[in-house]
Length: 422
Image (cartoon, rainbow, N blue to C red; front, top):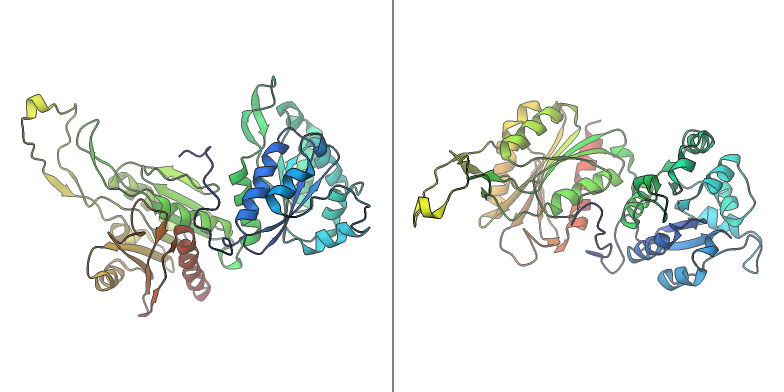
């Protein structure tokens, strides 16, 4: 699945939804642009993650989507009128109760009215009443977005009011308008933007977090390689969770097939030696490093420069392997003092003993131990069963859970360590 494809937001959701959306109040403002059709999916996804979503449609939005569509996916009434039988102070209630506000799409007209502090409909009055974080997703023709007045209005929202701009993306615009910067972000990206607005953690503000993810591929010849079945899901979940908490995150990732995380910087590598070089270059600037990649322990010692042919190699092929760098251990000297280091231990037997030995040998503060071969855990699944082992001798066994939930538990441990070292 590529960055443009939408991962299932309900994957791994427990009965109460997923952190940080579960049980939180979100106002979704929808204005009059063709991208408004995407907002129905945003409302649905936020609701499935456990959020209580109040939708406000402007009069322009109603030309593209109807309130009933949103009521059908949220189970809550959608609001359209500033003065109605729901109460003249509806904007106050919505603004005060909101824990995050997302305006998607945010048209040029809406951005101008919001920058002026207008209060001429339910959405703009709610914005004046709220003190919750506000995210706006511009969506318009690229020429309109590039206009100096629009640019000035966007800067005003960001710099004066502290609103967070999400996008726009570069891509196909409305029919006949070609491509350019002005396309609204995809629903799953906007859901993550709301997650960051809800999930910020002071302990991660201003921190840089490095995460390794996925497998490595060690070439045997130009078309074959030695590797493993790691998908990258666990590493990506950790990176996404750290980004939602407010960290600046870089992911050094091998060629896994999991959906790429939205928000973190992504650095692609193929081999263990490439991963080691990228990690070494970035570690000195990081406050925390999470080594979740499944790095191949060995590589072919003499990879062929052209494709090996069975007609030439015969019925048997002997391949001599040599040791790869141990990315976590060999870059230990690049960690600056106080860096929180987290490792993973995937073992077939003696799980806890081997995990603790890895913690001590590689200077980890925390090791996430998980059994290989257990149903629902390890590679190629969306869940995991782990034991968190810390350098003080503590052990915490977590029940079988989604990798997203496991990531949150690991990040809780990282947060405590970051706080203790300040």
